[in-house]
Image 1 (cartoon, rainbow, N blue to C red):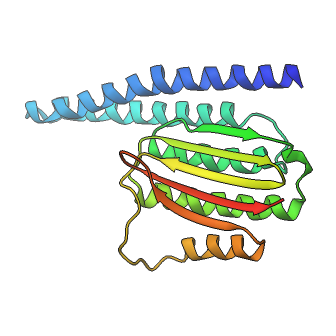
Image 2: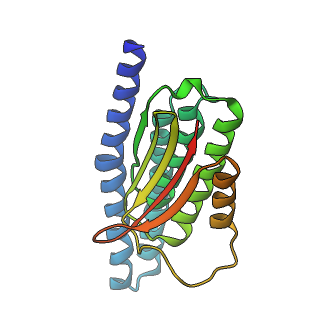
Length: 202
């Protein structure tokens, strides 16, 4: 277990370094190239700048794919972490950030059906976050303590929206919690953002 944890920590450090140093800098260079384009009327120069920017975008996409693969690792895909981690990392990739992840407690004792419910709720919460929150950070925690399983998804986005929507995601997450005798809440953070909390008996 110790060696596995060390390997996971090493992968995450490398992925974080790639995200901050490589992907971040390459993205900045790509934007500078785009900003230069209006300053020349030469079609050939514009074409060359466009080709260079397109190539950079391809490299950035490849780097982000490598980051995602490093973060996912080779863990048990049926476990809580194996189910939730890829969802969080995919959301982070779409938002351009590295999610902070916490998994705590004897999560390997959970019934597969409950793990499936948890993964479905995490998927819905993160999908909503990507679509509506306009967030720059994502925090996901899954904690099992005193017989209670709690999922929290936090962001620093625009906060809960009181306007009605056509989506059924919130209602579905609430229904899943109530069917298991649990609770579901969506609360604003200070100074900004949202915390989605789904808690059920384990």
